[in-house]
Length: 173
Image (cartoon, rainbow, N blue to C red; front, side):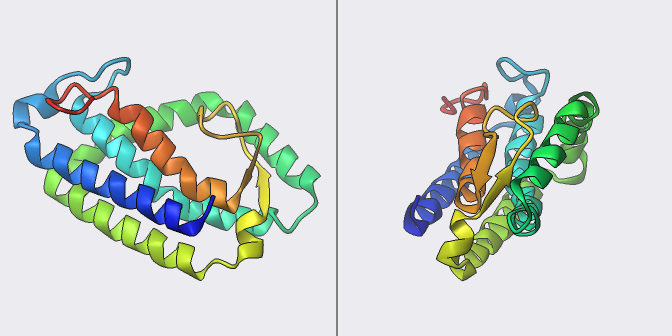
């Protein structure tokens, strides 16, 4: 995937996120989403969190991408074995996130995170964008067994688009 496409999809998600937050009523934010145990507000935080974790995923690719493939394969297997605790942290973290970040703070955080990802993506060398590692496929449906750094930059938008369809906000679908 080329950089321009990655930048454009992040900007599309940012604009969508701002629109969803600006149009949502307090009551709608408290409604349950479709297919999750989260409210719309908690799911919006979870969608933001997908972008927030990319900074850490980039570091993992930088480290593991330079090591023999068996090292990241073993690391991914270890993480797959810890899926249950991950799922609990993922769920409860998204439940608590809106208590720390209200809608205005979530919008501002999304801006900071996306701006940082744009800068980081622009600074990446082509060779590094092709470097990759194995990932825990049980943690997220958008984690592939092997992901390049470019795939990691694409991941949060796939995650965002999937969860957007689960929101029960007016105009979210």
